[in-house]
Length: 238
Image (cartoon, rainbow, N blue to C red; front, side, top):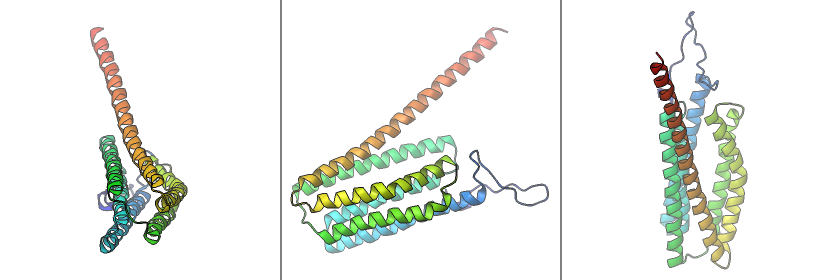
């Protein structure tokens, strides 16, 4: 959702702007700042992705190209978060489906890349692989820095974004270093195992999202059935 599409703040009787709070107490100014921040993060990561892909194509490095394309999934996830923030439940569900699809595509892409590197083994290039790992760590800390101002917000979307980015500073650092070690190892099986783990995490996320949506749909269907039965019973008792 762009900043321009945010709802206008209502005016009080004296003509002054009155804070526009949603159900979780986020005023218009904070909502606007958060939305712009998320779009800024998405744009920054997109620039990083394009730069990495261009460099990879220039030097003909397939692994660096894969690392650059992987950033696109982060761009998509942050873009979805910005679009659905402040929207209704139906939009949030569609966003969840989109996120699940993004994660599934990421998993399939990882498996395809694994097959490609088995069929056509790639040379070990410490500098380019080190750049990919270092950039992942730096970006994780930069995201935390720009989201720091929202750390005390209680809105579920904002809170989830902040906590996720905070945890990513630790997990991304460890994950990037483990991935780098696996890729520069003298044998290839640690790298292949690492890729399988990454693909498994992506598919697990997709499954968890789908299961959550299914449970939510079943719960609403059950509640709707109870309401209909109550209305029928009430009508029959007249």
